[in-house]
Image (spheres, rainbow, N blue to C red):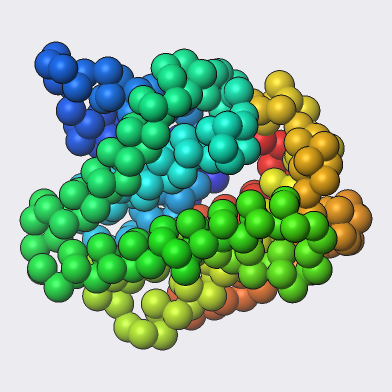
Length: 296
């Protein structure tokens, strides 16, 4: 088996190529909108969510072209969330992945529309017959992604996050719920997408879902640690923003060392959830260990 970095690079190349094919390049009046969409989608990144899609799909021998389309839809949805998170009304971030955020490169209105259009494109891709021959599978993909991204998922978590900044302190239970919604639900969809595409058993679906729940929380703790201790040249964005905003995080409540230990415990649990699979799930296990030791 290839090492994790090679697999991540291969996945990124496949998904980037697929996104390029799926993103129109018009030369008419709306060309600026698609330029902004492309700008944000080609900013790099770890492509972890697409990686989870591709690797979970591989467990069920799903056609790679179909898996790449779902992985691209996930990345479109994720990119939309980053564009909107960076807006002045949200996190007010000037940079993303080492270059100007979308609203700085273009303007706020264009950034909002680019995010909206990427969200719509994600569902358009999932609903297309090229993604899967079975309409029931396509409907399930659309349903689960809409739940992961909506009011009981990513958007709901972002709302709680904004309220927390305004209203004050949160305890560890509240932060865990916030991050399970804001971050974890999109990781969960990415992980179970392969089981949906491959019509896997309920047991295999739940194994991937449970893996993703622990994976997502560990990922967020690692993010909090990077914001507190990271190098902005490696992270590609400013650090220390959480502390400056007085934001409650896993690190601010637990302290760096306890938070780091909790992240490793979560990853151990995530890896254990995959015991129903054979060595074909090793890339997922390696990805889980990678998220707590990353530097960006």
